[in-house]
Image (cartoon, rainbow over all chains, first blue to last red; front, side, top):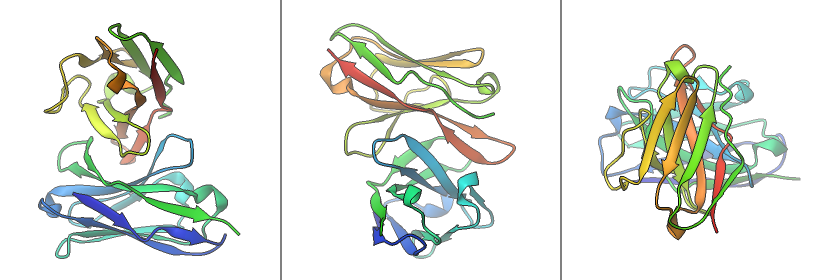
Length: 117
Length: 108
């Protein structure tokens, strides 16, 4: 399973670090992603880190503000959020994609991030 | 462009068939995956690689593709099918992932 944590309320311009704890599978066999969902809106891909951590990719709207990282020994995935804006308010999900595949086969329940003054 | 367009809503009577489309410029040359998201829950994969069903997904849920349009079909609709459905693709050039705009299925 995947369990997110670290969400909360932060002021515009602030920072937050989200974490995702994985269990029950070998994390090194999966690319790991963050996907977000603003209130009442659809799913939006945020970032991807390869199974071995060698590459990271970000949605265009991130513009250098977020950093994805992983620790395969601890089976954890992180997302550092900086320079937060009102429009970053969303539920942030972590999700996995098996190596060689392009679909998500497991999602966490999400953690709420609210950017508000 | 990787904009994936879905109808905002589909209404269907119990026992009938719901059809959800996903249109995009590159769909003909990429694989499409579909997810169901019930209120307050995480998405669940229902179709992958255009038409494959994960274990536990009933045969009355199927996927297909023709040209630049992918289609999710739910036959013999039940109350439990009421949810939001999203298509998803991967861009092999940028390694970015994209979701459709989402379709809310309502069972009358």
